[in-house]
Image (cartoon, rainbow, N blue to C red; front, side, top):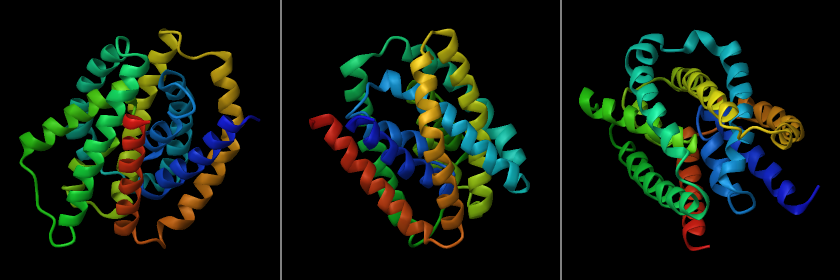
Length: 244
């Protein structure tokens, strides 16, 4: 195992523990931090299938918490439309341009999320249907390009004032559906390879460990403080990608 893979394994442990705890964060944290060691075009086909496996496990245990109506009637249709557009854009954005654009995206969304989390210290407010719909659509586009539309979707879904367990299970169900589409696109466009599969096998024990940790933390950690911590990490990581 070389230095880059050891760093990747540590990043995956952090990212997928976050996913198991809160229902989001695995792909965007993995890609943001691991982009210093591997190309984003290689990382996405590695981490997205692992994300599906983790989310399937969570849903198998906590499916009763899924807010089916919100998922099927509101979030999924708009995200799927945006996802198809994002997948098309992904074919034309490569290399350093992709890395720079991703760093800028992470910083902007993370700062916005920190501000939103700070405001929620005082009061949660609703969002007009057209505004939340636009965010779900934009989140689908970002999901198609970076497999990391989570921050946008998290912000919009959080304004629905869902309970923590409902919030996590509903988002995990959403990621399974969207990421299955992404995996199919990766296969059809030749981005999945024997090398990708080797990384899946090497990282699977790390994901299992992260799942165990995240499940344990879900009922004990202060989620509000944890969100602040995660978005601070993402902001600094995004800045390091832009100026690194």
